[in-house]
Length: 84
Image (cartoon, rainbow, N blue to C red; front, side):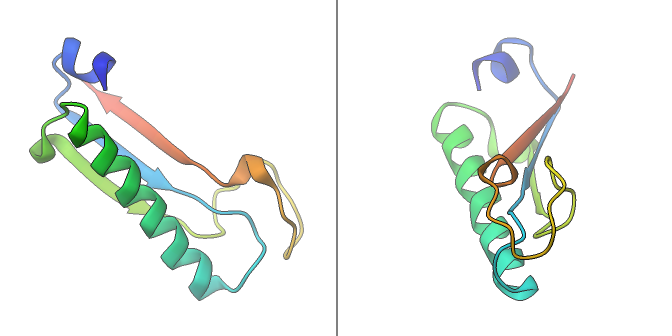
C-alpha cells in the first residue's frame, strides 16, 4: 500500500488464486473472496478505491504446477500488480 500511494500509482490490480484442491466452482468463489479481502485491506491502508481492480482465477494460473486435488500453500495467494 505504501509503495502504491508513495509512487502515486494510477492502477492496482489484485488477483486472487487458489490451489487445486476442491471443486472448480468452490475455488472460483474462494479466489474471489481472497482478491476482495486483499483489495479491502489495501483501501484500509490508504490506497484509493477508484484505482483498485480485483479479479480472480480459481484453479488457473498456479504458482506451483500441481495435479488436480493437490494442496499447495504457495498457490493460495493474492498477487498485486501496480501501474504508475
